[in-house]
Image (cartoon, rainbow, N blue to C red; front, side, top):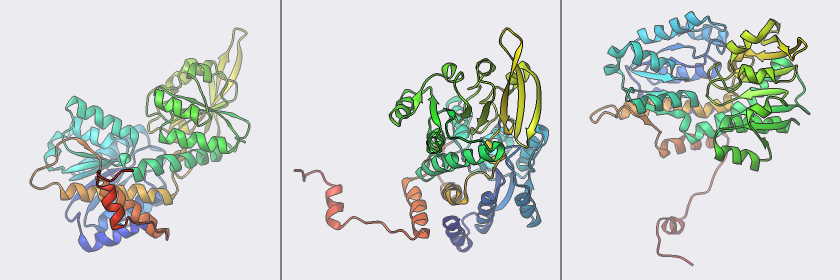
Length: 400
């Protein structure tokens, strides 16, 4: 992660986060470990909890703990431990929060409002969390400024598209070892994540179907060469289903009843509610785990009391982090530069006229800085405008 390493080197000298307590709820992965070290180099104290019960890399958590960092995470956390760990970070009384999914921010706003006067702001990593933050802002419930790091161009155009696209299939293939070629893959959602997932499925020889609620995204999927239809129709023909919407119950028990025997269900959205797992449990005759991240559900099929099998991957949680290692470090380099620089930006803007409790996007100049850092580490150079070109670009008098 050379771009983030360059940020860390600058932070070591400038200490922009000196004396700040940063509370984090992120996937505890090796990449997150580098972010934690970067924030500490900037002068911060850090406490971190996992943001998903199955995404922690235990060796990374152990490494951070050995260095004396307050880390609350293990792979396979119970629901009670998950929230206990979030509350442990809250008890750290952070001045800045870094979230992935908005659970930490929600916990503070719902049950620890007394901490808000000492919080200068926070950052959110993912689409699902930003949707929740915008709902909070709309309701007047958001009480401190949040930076939508996911909305950085250097985040969603790379992490979501390239990272999720590749790591989702890494997780599915590690969990199942299936042949993708020739199968019908149904991708629910055609945002940056769904687009990347669909493209890579097609690259491996799958017949790709896209379901969407957004007419523009649906049209884009059709123009990209994918079949577009409703889930009511797609559920009858799919072999592998991947949800990436940030929504709830995209695949319902009713859909599952119409699926082929042997259909596989995977999720790459943040929470495990995109697939109606409770509904699946209710219609199942029996279930068993057949591989580490594969559960086989047997459900009734038809009037003749026959049965069919549905396979759920990674308990419906983020398949790329539960069954694999998440995004490659090279792409997280960009995302976590965004997190580190967002913390610096919030600190710089915390004095005097305090930022309003709204959802902010980092200035374009910060996004450009991240891209320049990455280009430099890749040994790539780009053109710059000449004086004449600058004058032309900023004027209106000169035409044909």
